[in-house]
Picture 1: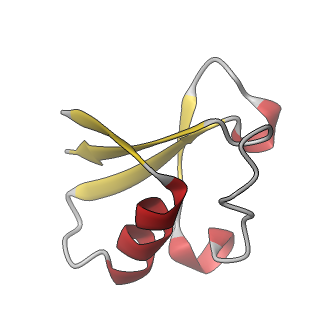
Picture 2: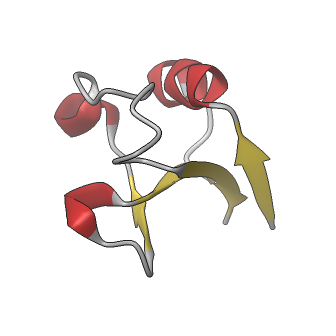
Picture 3: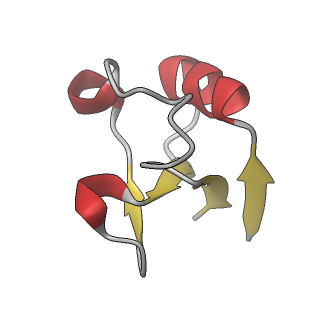
Amino acid sequence: MEIKLLPFFAKIILFINPFNRLKIMCLGYSEDFENFTELVWQDDKYLDFTNRKSYPQFQLWYV
């Protein structure tokens, strides 16, 4: 199941993430505009979530 997220909510959920089954996915990560990439708080806490040109879409996935 995929749900589109605003960047603000993507960052908050990524920070809190109480469940291992919730994944925040990002389109455009490492300039990959065809596939979504999973974000991990430890690695991506300084990501510019507000940069719509580089990161046009965030999704919440339930695995």
